[in-house]
Amino acid sequence: MFKDTIVLVTGAASGIGQEIARQFVEEGATVVGADLNEKNLQETSDRFGDRFIAKLCDISKGDQIRDLCKYIEGEFERLDVLVNNAGAGHLQDPEEIEEEDFYFNYDILLKGPVLLVKHLAPLLRKSANPSVINIASIAARINAGKHIMYATAKAALEKFTQHLTKDLPGIRFNCILPGVIDTPILKNYGEENLPAIFELGASKVPCGRVGTTADIANCVLFVCSDKATYINGASIVIDGGHMQAGDWGL
Image 1 (cartoon, rainbow, N blue to C red):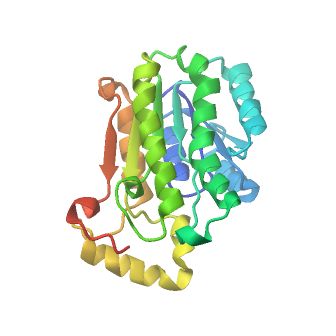
Image 2 (spheres, rainbow, N blue to C red):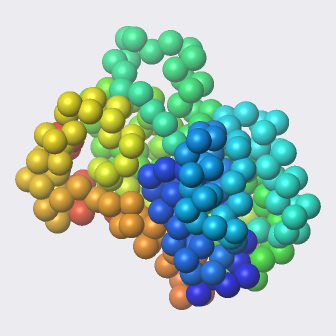
């Protein structure tokens, strides 16, 4: 489906980004996988083969983003798909937030995608079906405790996506909002709490389970495909019905 397609996935060394990269490679694409975890990135490259090109990059750093974009321009002269997936977050009480906490969240979750779109828009315009997917979160729409910095940054990313649709016509921009997904980020809640999280997922999520990385990747590949060329400016919630159920105790 994606033969000869050039894809950039950030946060490609684990979790959702790794599964998105794997599926694109499996479908024939060449994937530039960017991540700051060198060990995981190398292991991912070893598993996925020659069509996965590992690039060490901290997307909170503007100079590293520029270098990554220059590489893609020099190597491929175009880009077909950009997946802004890299993410991180800390659970914090508002009264405990320090200035560096603000920048930690917003530099990764918002500044990185903003600069990647800025530098890569000319390369995306050279594609026959250019597509940008921003991975936000249902945290952007609900008010879970101590999620304030992560949630507001993700809300800004969704709004950024909507503006791009109007401001950069000819490139499709869509946003995906995952619910609770089985990824390494769940360890932020404490590894000792993971069994309880999965039990809560089974009881509070109408689909009866915590989501998988494949649940997100399956949608990403569809939205980027030739079967979805009229899907533009959409925000797609993938949470098993969790948000609609109104019980956000996870």
